[in-house]
Image 1 (cartoon, one colour):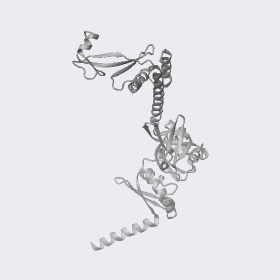
Image 2 (image 1 turned 90 degrees about the horizontal axis):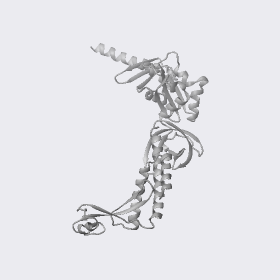
Image 3 (image 1 turned 90 degrees about the vertical axis):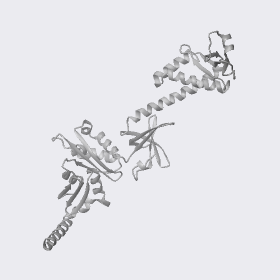
Length: 361
């Protein structure tokens, strides 16, 4: 090892962000292991690298004791005084034992350590970069598919899209560009493991933020998201500025903005509704496109009874209850949907019970 090698390490420190002292200490530790493995496994020893010229020295260490039982580890006080009259029991005597051919071993070891530390540093940099991006959207290229997991290339690393986070029915092919949502970044021995999703409601939110400048600027706020990935979603938007139509901003001219999001999600239907601080009005809007006649609410239980025209009942409930289910997710309310005729029957039954009780009373 020489001055040129030290210079190369200094260049790596600037380029890769790995501290010179960290590298040298790691090389010293690796050289000590190499020395013990090849020359003296039972000896106490230390290895030093001169920070000025790169010279490597190996020293054995012996503890000064009254009588030495193992000369590889100890030296008697009598013999220690022959070396230096100032030695006392408990002192450590170091003797240079650098092997003649240690340079070759040192070069190989240093190379291995440097490569390993650079790899670790790069992994840490990637981890820190993506750990800060949890909850963000990334664009990558499908690299391969293994055991139904999709591996997506993200520059110097890759993300994993597990089967549970894939949109039902969506087909992934090698080379496809794909937007995904980072749900978790794990630190592993093999480097950062980035878990992404195509089903998370956060993906829908981020896609709208990319398409709608008013959302990025904070003029329009996305208040709630309800999603059944691959089928249908609802978002509730709001603006404190009365001059801005939050729904119109998200839909875009001729529906271009919302259509871009729909295309990214391969045709997933999206309802954009206006959020309202009035619970009754918000619940009514959430059942869009169904028309609502009236809403009764019980605030403490967060239960709402919604009355719709008879011909709108199936639309309000939706296929397999999807519309009602999404509206409940969006609002956070339990929603009971009744048609006009059902409510008339209900009111009639309640009236009859009331009348019977009055007569009996």
